[in-house]
Image 1 (spheres, rainbow, N blue to C red):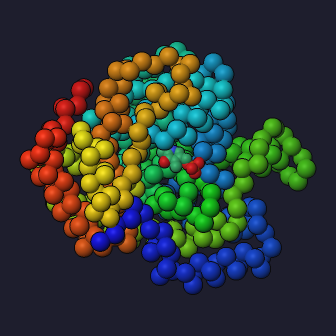
Image 2 (image 1 turned 120 degrees about the vertical axis):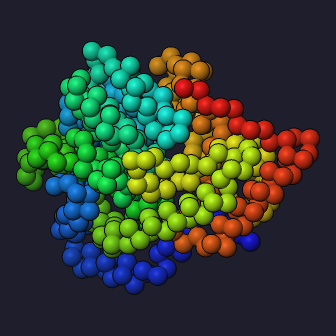
Image 3 (image 1 turned 90 degrees about the vertical axis):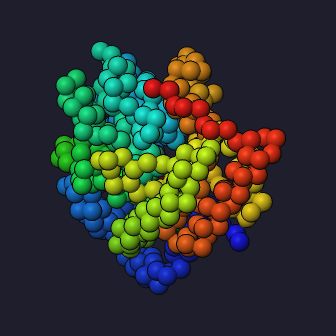
Length: 384
Ligand SMILES: *Cc1c(COP(=O)(O)O)cnc(C)c1O
């Protein structure tokens, strides 16, 4: 049995007519870069997020970058984030001239550890960017207490967390701004690149709208230096349709996660993800941990199962960040995650049969490696 890591075709098949009609509407509207369809999606998405404003941009990376620019974060400033994330979170900080500072993640939730975050604050710190990694919200309550106490901005990276909730509130209803990506493989994905910033601050949303359109206040009148970060209307049309299916898709992901948990929980040598007590997790990625990753991935490949690794190198250990001077062991939890994570197939249209095949294959793999010379050992306990 073949089990792909992700199958977008299976997701689009049943709604293809709706999607095609929406794209045709854009073609006849004659507005392709920004325009009324983008505005319609922005309204729908803001309402979905429980916040007054959503600003459509070209990608999640642009959402992060423009938010930082609009908040006047730049040279001399520090922004604290998680080392257990996709490069773009830190890259956006660097790209506006500020310095990314990392704080290690929690060993169970895999999101930034609030105590370690607080210890990383210096007089230069301007903002923190918790990342709702894999669809698990960071612990926003304590994080917001810390940002308030120290007068810092709270910007969330929710690029993997469309529909995730923190204590029954949509994650974007908390903090100063929340950034989303609609890269095709995300829980809410476009037919190309797109992103959005969600915020409740009127002034901030105005400034981001101006920045994303070359700093224009009206056509050919530029009040500031911006960039071209407009959202494509065809992407907005697709997203508007797909947004109406998001909750159901997330519900499927949650029930797949439960089936994985039931099959793999307690299996020696495997650590399954845990939904935090405060969280409504949306399982963008279902990542297990094992100390024998390479062996397990190749065993599963032979069973027709495709896995991923998110991410093999923690951000502070990326070659591009050599100059920051971090050393191995600086963030032991994130580093161990980078060595041990395996992302199992996860998308709404996975079948119970496919998940059962993945579960059985992992059980077989652990028995084989267990009985053989290269025993899969129990993962080393997490530090911290
Ligand atoms: C996908 C992603 C981004 C970047 O989004 P793009 O739309 O690809 O630019 C940023 N942060 C995280 C955590 C992501 O998963």
